[in-house]
Image 1 (spheres, rainbow, N blue to C red):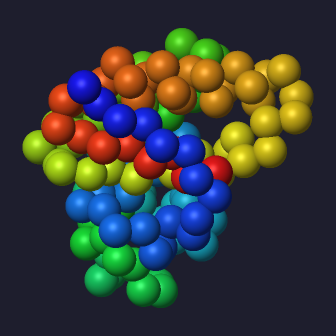
Image 2: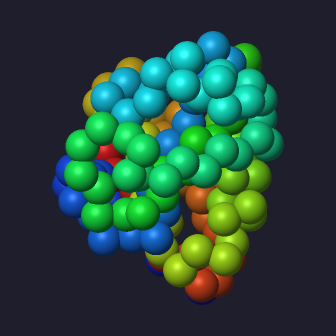
Length: 138
C-alpha cells in the first residue's frame, strides 16, 4: 500500500529518489527551472508528459538526485490535475520514494484551491505503485 505524508519541509532537503513537480505549456518552475530551459529540452507541458532533470544541472543543492517535471496541460480542472499527477507517478513507478511538490496549492484557502489539493492527492494515490512513498510538500 502506498504511503502519503503531508509536510511543510523545504523540498530541497528531503531525502528522496525523485522530486516531482509540474508545469503548464510555456511555463517554468519558479526557483528551479526556467520556461526556456524546459522548452530547450523538448518539454511541452502536455498532460501525461514527464521530463527528468538531474538536480546537479539546477541551481541550489538538492538531497534528491532527480527533479521530474510533469506536464499539467492547459486545463486547470480537478480532472486535469488528477490525471497529470497519476500519469507522472505511474511513469515513476520504479522510484522507491517520490517527493510530490504542490506549491500551487500551498495555501488552500479558496474552494478551488481545496479542490485542486484533493485532485492532486487522488492522482497521487491512484497513480502510485505500492513501493512508492509519497511526501506531499506544501
